[in-house]
Image (cartoon, helix red, strand yellow):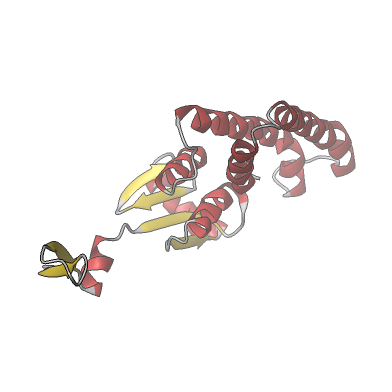
Length: 195
Protein backbone atom coordinates (compact mmCIF):
# COMPACT_ATOMS: atom_id res chain seq x y z
CA UNK A 1 0.00 0.00 0.00
CA UNK A 2 1.41 3.42 -0.94
CA UNK A 3 2.26 5.93 1.74
CA UNK A 4 0.50 9.28 1.50
CA UNK A 5 1.70 12.55 2.93
CA UNK A 6 0.46 16.12 2.75
CA UNK A 7 3.22 18.59 2.04
CA UNK A 8 2.70 22.30 2.60
CA UNK A 9 4.52 24.58 0.18
CA UNK A 10 4.92 28.34 0.50
CA UNK A 11 4.46 30.19 -2.77
CA UNK A 12 6.67 32.96 -1.46
CA UNK A 13 8.22 33.37 1.99
CA UNK A 14 6.34 36.64 2.55
CA UNK A 15 2.93 35.26 1.64
CA UNK A 16 0.70 33.81 4.31
CA UNK A 17 -1.34 31.70 1.92
CA UNK A 18 -0.08 28.18 1.60
CA UNK A 19 -0.58 25.49 -1.00
CA UNK A 20 -1.09 21.90 -0.09
CA UNK A 21 0.15 19.09 -2.26
CA UNK A 22 -0.72 15.44 -1.80
CA UNK A 23 2.30 13.32 -2.54
CA UNK A 24 2.01 9.57 -3.01
CA UNK A 25 5.17 7.67 -2.32
CA UNK A 26 5.43 4.18 -3.79
CA UNK A 27 7.90 1.63 -2.60
CA UNK A 28 10.21 0.09 -5.21
CA UNK A 29 8.34 -3.23 -4.89
CA UNK A 30 5.00 -1.56 -5.64
CA UNK A 31 6.45 0.31 -8.61
CA UNK A 32 7.83 -2.92 -10.07
CA UNK A 33 4.55 -4.71 -9.32
CA UNK A 34 2.60 -2.06 -11.26
CA UNK A 35 4.93 -2.14 -14.29
CA UNK A 36 3.78 -3.91 -17.42
CA UNK A 37 5.68 -7.14 -18.08
CA UNK A 38 6.52 -7.73 -21.74
CA UNK A 39 7.78 -11.03 -23.11
CA UNK A 40 8.72 -11.30 -26.80
CA UNK A 41 9.24 -14.79 -28.23
CA UNK A 42 10.93 -15.37 -31.59
CA UNK A 43 13.83 -17.23 -33.17
CA UNK A 44 17.42 -16.32 -32.39
CA UNK A 45 17.80 -13.87 -35.26
CA UNK A 46 16.50 -10.51 -36.44
CA UNK A 47 13.65 -11.37 -38.79
CA UNK A 48 10.08 -10.48 -37.90
CA UNK A 49 10.82 -9.58 -34.26
CA UNK A 50 13.57 -7.04 -34.90
CA UNK A 51 11.22 -4.08 -35.23
CA UNK A 52 9.61 -4.91 -31.87
CA UNK A 53 13.06 -5.21 -30.27
CA UNK A 54 14.03 -1.82 -31.67
CA UNK A 55 10.80 -0.25 -30.39
CA UNK A 56 11.57 -1.60 -26.90
CA UNK A 57 15.09 -0.14 -27.15
CA UNK A 58 13.86 3.26 -28.40
CA UNK A 59 11.34 3.42 -25.56
CA UNK A 60 13.97 2.27 -23.04
CA UNK A 61 11.42 -0.34 -21.97
CA UNK A 62 12.63 -3.52 -20.28
CA UNK A 63 11.26 -6.77 -21.70
CA UNK A 64 11.96 -10.47 -21.70
CA UNK A 65 13.57 -11.46 -25.02
CA UNK A 66 13.03 -15.20 -25.54
CA UNK A 67 15.05 -16.51 -28.50
CA UNK A 68 14.19 -19.98 -29.71
CA UNK A 69 16.15 -22.51 -31.69
CA UNK A 70 14.31 -24.54 -34.35
CA UNK A 71 14.43 -27.50 -31.96
CA UNK A 72 12.82 -25.47 -29.14
CA UNK A 73 10.15 -24.10 -31.49
CA UNK A 74 8.82 -27.48 -32.69
CA UNK A 75 7.18 -28.57 -29.39
CA UNK A 76 5.83 -25.04 -28.74
CA UNK A 77 4.21 -24.60 -32.16
CA UNK A 78 0.84 -26.18 -31.27
CA UNK A 79 0.47 -23.98 -28.17
CA UNK A 80 1.07 -20.68 -29.99
CA UNK A 81 -1.94 -18.54 -31.01
CA UNK A 82 -1.44 -19.10 -34.76
CA UNK A 83 1.26 -21.77 -34.63
CA UNK A 84 4.02 -19.27 -35.38
CA UNK A 85 6.26 -16.61 -33.88
CA UNK A 86 6.73 -13.81 -32.98
CA UNK A 87 4.38 -13.70 -30.02
CA UNK A 88 4.26 -10.83 -27.54
CA UNK A 89 2.94 -11.43 -24.05
CA UNK A 90 1.69 -8.35 -22.21
CA UNK A 91 1.09 -9.22 -18.57
CA UNK A 92 0.33 -12.79 -19.66
CA UNK A 93 -2.00 -11.87 -22.55
CA UNK A 94 -0.78 -13.08 -25.94
CA UNK A 95 -0.60 -11.04 -29.14
CA UNK A 96 0.46 -12.71 -32.39
CA UNK A 97 1.48 -11.43 -35.84
CA UNK A 98 4.49 -9.17 -36.21
CA UNK A 99 2.68 -6.15 -37.67
CA UNK A 100 0.01 -6.22 -34.93
CA UNK A 101 2.79 -6.40 -32.33
CA UNK A 102 4.72 -3.55 -33.93
CA UNK A 103 1.67 -1.31 -34.23
CA UNK A 104 0.68 -2.02 -30.63
CA UNK A 105 4.16 -1.19 -29.32
CA UNK A 106 4.51 1.90 -31.54
CA UNK A 107 1.20 3.25 -30.26
CA UNK A 108 1.95 2.31 -26.64
CA UNK A 109 5.39 3.96 -26.70
CA UNK A 110 4.35 7.07 -28.67
CA UNK A 111 5.93 6.24 -32.03
CA UNK A 112 2.73 5.73 -34.04
CA UNK A 113 2.27 9.34 -35.17
CA UNK A 114 0.97 12.51 -33.57
CA UNK A 115 -2.59 12.06 -34.89
CA UNK A 116 -4.75 9.49 -36.69
CA UNK A 117 -3.75 10.67 -40.17
CA UNK A 118 -0.02 10.57 -39.44
CA UNK A 119 -0.49 7.11 -37.95
CA UNK A 120 -2.24 6.01 -41.16
CA UNK A 121 0.60 7.43 -43.30
CA UNK A 122 3.16 5.53 -41.20
CA UNK A 123 1.05 2.38 -41.57
CA UNK A 124 0.88 2.85 -45.34
CA UNK A 125 4.68 3.00 -45.54
CA UNK A 126 4.98 -0.04 -43.28
CA UNK A 127 2.51 -1.90 -45.51
CA UNK A 128 4.60 -0.89 -48.54
CA UNK A 129 7.65 -2.39 -46.82
CA UNK A 130 5.65 -5.57 -46.10
CA UNK A 131 4.86 -5.83 -49.82
CA UNK A 132 8.57 -5.38 -50.58
CA UNK A 133 9.54 -8.07 -48.10
CA UNK A 134 7.00 -10.44 -49.68
CA UNK A 135 8.61 -9.90 -53.09
CA UNK A 136 12.00 -10.84 -51.61
CA UNK A 137 10.83 -14.18 -50.17
CA UNK A 138 12.03 -16.38 -53.07
CA UNK A 139 15.56 -15.00 -52.71
CA UNK A 140 15.71 -15.32 -48.93
CA UNK A 141 14.11 -18.78 -48.89
CA UNK A 142 16.86 -19.95 -51.25
CA UNK A 143 19.54 -18.12 -49.25
CA UNK A 144 18.41 -19.77 -46.01
CA UNK A 145 18.07 -23.21 -47.60
CA UNK A 146 14.28 -23.46 -47.31
CA UNK A 147 13.86 -23.65 -51.09
CA UNK A 148 16.08 -24.46 -54.04
CA UNK A 149 17.25 -21.66 -56.29
CA UNK A 150 20.14 -19.94 -58.01
CA UNK A 151 21.01 -17.00 -55.75
CA UNK A 152 22.63 -14.91 -58.48
CA UNK A 153 19.65 -15.38 -60.78
CA UNK A 154 17.15 -14.69 -57.98
CA UNK A 155 19.07 -11.55 -56.97
CA UNK A 156 18.94 -10.20 -60.53
CA UNK A 157 15.36 -11.24 -61.27
CA UNK A 158 13.73 -10.74 -57.87
CA UNK A 159 15.75 -8.75 -55.37
CA UNK A 160 17.10 -5.90 -57.51
CA UNK A 161 13.76 -5.08 -59.24
CA UNK A 162 11.89 -5.24 -55.90
CA UNK A 163 14.48 -2.98 -54.26
CA UNK A 164 14.34 -0.44 -57.07
CA UNK A 165 10.54 -0.38 -57.00
CA UNK A 166 10.39 0.03 -53.19
CA UNK A 167 13.05 2.75 -53.06
CA UNK A 168 11.37 4.50 -56.00
CA UNK A 169 8.10 4.73 -54.08
CA UNK A 170 9.83 5.91 -50.90
CA UNK A 171 11.85 8.53 -52.83
CA UNK A 172 8.69 9.79 -54.54
CA UNK A 173 6.94 10.04 -51.16
CA UNK A 174 9.85 11.93 -49.58
CA UNK A 175 10.07 14.41 -52.48
CA UNK A 176 6.32 15.03 -52.38
CA UNK A 177 6.46 15.72 -48.63
CA UNK A 178 9.85 17.47 -48.53
CA UNK A 179 8.37 20.64 -47.00
CA UNK A 180 7.00 18.68 -44.02
CA UNK A 181 10.31 18.32 -42.19
CA UNK A 182 8.93 17.32 -38.79
CA UNK A 183 6.55 14.81 -40.37
CA UNK A 184 9.31 13.29 -42.48
CA UNK A 185 11.59 12.99 -39.45
CA UNK A 186 8.89 11.15 -37.47
CA UNK A 187 7.98 8.93 -40.44
CA UNK A 188 11.58 7.97 -41.13
CA UNK A 189 12.18 7.23 -37.45
CA UNK A 190 9.12 4.98 -37.41
CA UNK A 191 9.96 3.31 -40.72
CA UNK A 192 13.60 2.80 -39.69
CA UNK A 193 12.54 0.31 -37.02
CA UNK A 194 10.89 -1.83 -39.70
CA UNK A 195 13.81 -1.77 -42.11
